Amino acid sequence: MAFRLARVEPPSGLGEPLDRQAALDVFDVDLARRQLLPDLVLVADRQRDGERGAGLVLTVEVQSRTNKQKRWRIPHYQAALADEHERETWVVVVSFDASVSRQLAAWRETGPPRFEVIVLDASRVPARYDMAKALAKPSAAVLGAALHACQGDIGAARWGLEVVSRLPAKRRMRDATTILAAVDKSMRLTLIKEFPFAPDDDRLLDIERRSGTYHLGLEEGLEKGLEKGRAKGREEGRRHVLKTMVFALLEVRGIPLSETERARVDAEMRIEALERWAELARSVTHAAALFEHSPLR
Image (cartoon, rainbow, N blue to C red):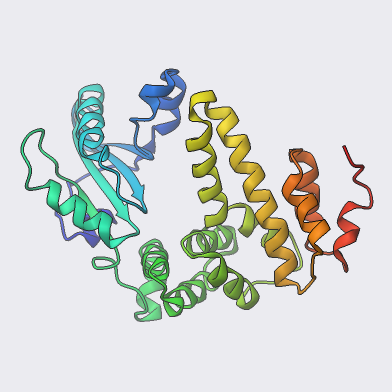
């Protein structure tokens, strides 16, 4: 898909790509080195030729803001993966911000090490086109909807969710959360109200859990807690997200919080309590009911 959207001729005869990111994370226990790894690593063999070096490595980075260190990191792991797998190694950057795309284009004109990536952004990936074409290639449609929705185009988000609503049930939530993860809180609340799937199960909670708020909170927690270790950073991010979920779900349902109740949620540090409150926020009729079976510390 990345090659087609970027109008780049892909290598021919490739088999199904395999995700190798988990293997890299497990193998490399050095935290500082692991920060150099890409977001996703896919390795594919050529079906007609099983010899070493016959295939492709595709690495994927997702960026929503500029990062000068990527100028040097991307060529680093591109070379490292090429050496490890002895295959052509391509880098795809999914850019959710025009400033990121401009920065990547500028780096192409700089000196060694050579910087060459396939950029997928709102200018390259369309949205809001013929529904039949979208359903024929739904992954491209979902990506296009997310990229344009990230720029504030709620129409693109609605179109993408309409595409998703016509897909097989097993992939609807995954694709819907991809779109919802790309938008800000205000737009996400609007879209959740309009969401074309039945809200009488765990989907609303799952959307919030896997939404942009979650990933932003996780990223912020990782940055703040990096010197204390990745696990602690993830825990901080998770607390931030669960608190946001409680507030967002109550807001969507029109249930007010008093200053005292809001302060109690903000001050809570126990993950298990926050998870319980996020679950209850979908069904309680008044905010005080969140805390009825939650003793104060």
